[in-house]
Image (cartoon, rainbow, N blue to C red; front, top):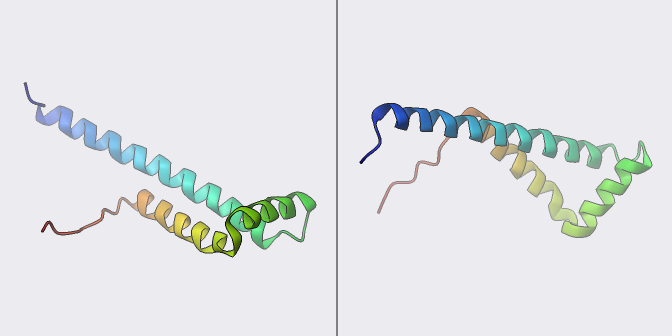
Length: 86
């Protein structure tokens, strides 16, 4: 038994909703961490968060956060990777 057209369409809508939720989670969490890094001189708590992530990942934490932020935007917008098959 195969899937009907309606169940496939419903599954596609469900996947789009999951990707949008994952995108918003990525965008909000990375935006918070980037703000912590930028505003680390304001409070000791923000400085502790920044020091932890720089201690774990080093200075590479900034490109990682920017890449994750961009990935979250791509998830929200619904972009797909268009790589041709060989």
